[in-house]
Length: 214
Image 1 (cartoon, rainbow, N blue to C red):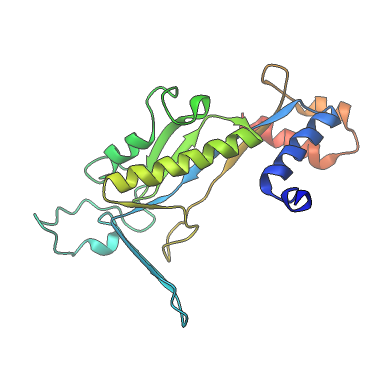
Image 2: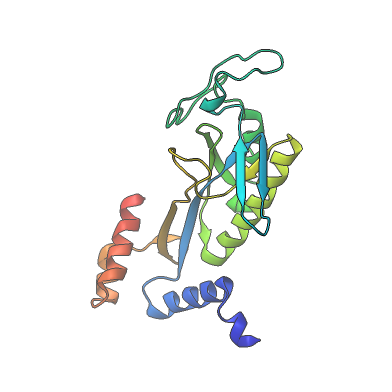
């Protein structure tokens, strides 16, 4: 059983954190993912023995511009690859998204890792979160996904983290900002990495990229 557990993502992440500290390059690394997901007003899936399919729908979808809607179709829909940062009335999920994003970063399900910003791009919000160490941030992302699924359900919607639910438009991604740090969250600079590990160009490159992001 121990052999099987050692291959789990959590075990690998813990060993990676321990290895980083053992190199002397940094005490730990901080990870800040940008979580993206789609909100659908209807979804259907089937996996019979002879095939499978899925279908998602959203009133914000451009394909619904000519749809007959109870109360009238008011338009205000972003086009394909449009609406990177829309505002109401184009953005109809503002209230739902703000339920996912606690206001001050302290009352959310993740403590210091609470969401910082919400964005909606044609029914695909993105929630940036503050950084934390690798294992802790992975736990926080799982809590965040659980909260998002339940908030969406409370609005009669479905949230999905599928990578590419729509054809011909951008899918869900999760950019991850990372920084090696030492002591009290002091970023490790490129020169420090070179001095501590001169024969590790890949590590040097990663530290340099992290420093540029900051």
